[in-house]
Each structure stands twice: as structure tokens, then as C-alpha cells.
Image (tube, rainbow, N blue to C red; front, top):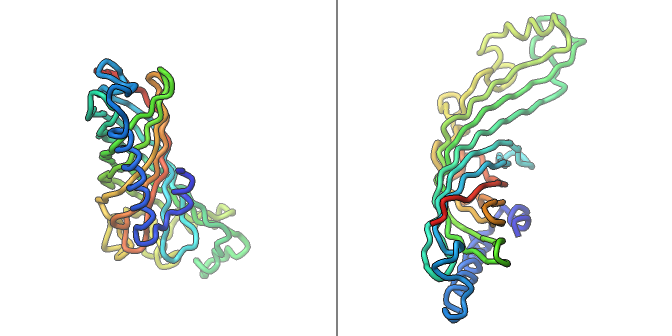
Length: 273
């Protein structure tokens, strides 16, 4: 199911998204109201219906698609988060989950076979090929809120599909670009290029924050975004494994770039009461 979402990130006029939402709530209300309360497998004494806390660590893969590029660029990262599950019923395992996650991203790209003589024609380094290396460090805070329902399988295992919305605050997106030459002499020449020379010859900046509107114009990143997400957790005793995909609706991260995310997490549920 998550694989289907990933392979169909472009949702046509919101139709597929509406179908997913209707299917999710259809399953939820069928389980809430479609069975006799006396026949339900959950009761007030069951931990499946009680509120809980969760701490988790996650791996995140970001997809950044510029409208001029055929393929999205990938940014890898990790996160640490806390979630509280609010029980909505004493007899059915339906919850509102709210939490906070700190997310660190690392963007490492290399653009090979740059013709250095075109960059620095006044110097005799024609015989030495080189490349441009990009290094980016990102940090954001996500505040997700989800509606979740637990399906018990035996006494110690459950599956929990969820869907919700999150507010994402992009706080850091700093990039460094550096030209590399295979010769020591050529590298010394490149290292002494002024910032303006570097930009004029490469089209980018040596040091850049993605929130600098003066340098980036319409490419500047937004600090704040609302996002929709859908996913599923698998819980065995106190251990929780989860996968979620950000559907990518809402504002673009910039006027020219869309971003979406796949998140895989492992967590521990505690303080069930």
C-alpha cells in the first residue's frame, strides 16, 4: 500500500487522495460501529484502548523535484521524536496521536567532469579535470497529528494504520560548494577564487542558505509548510515499527521545487495508563 503511494506521488486533482481518505474512514467507522459492543475484543482494562507515549528514532528519505529536472534529488536524514496517543474510546482502539520530531538532513552531491579551463581560462590547468562537490546540512521540526486505529492480532501484536496532517518548520538549510582539481597547482588556483568569481563561473555560491531570497529569488525555500501523511505501525508488546509517506499536498518548498518524504521508524511505547 505504501509502495503504491510512493509510485503515485502525482495525485490527479486530489481524486486519489480523496479515495484514500474515504477508504481509511470507511474502515475506521465500520470497526467502530459495525459490531456489537458486547462482541468487541477490547475493553477498558485492555492496554489496546488506553493512552500511551512513544519515543522513536527514524530514517527519512526526502524527494526534492525541481520542475526543470526529470528525476527528484534525494536527501537522506534521521529524526528523533516523541508521540502521545490520546484514547478516544473505552471500548474501541481509536486514537488521536500528536507529537514532535526533530529531523536532520544531509545532502551530498558530486557533479563530475567539470572543464576547469572554462572556469579559469587565464591559468594553464587545461590538462587537469575536476568536479564540483555540494554539501548541505538541514534541520527541521515536524508537528504531526494523526487519527489512528489498532487492529489486534493475538494478545501481543497489533497493526495501526493512521492518517493525518503535520506542520513542518524548516529551520536550517546551509550549503557549501567546492571545486576540486586533480592537480595541487590547479586546486590552489580554485581555492583563491573570490565569491563573486566562483558564482560567475559555476552559477552557484560557495556558501549559501536556502532561505536567502536576495541570492535565490524564486528558488528560495519556505520556512513553514503544512503536509498530509499516511502510514502504518506494527506493534509487538512495547516495540513499534512504522512507515509513513508524506503525500506532498500543500505549499511547495519553493516556487520551483516540490518536496515529499518517506519515513521509517522504530520506537518504544511506555507509560500506558
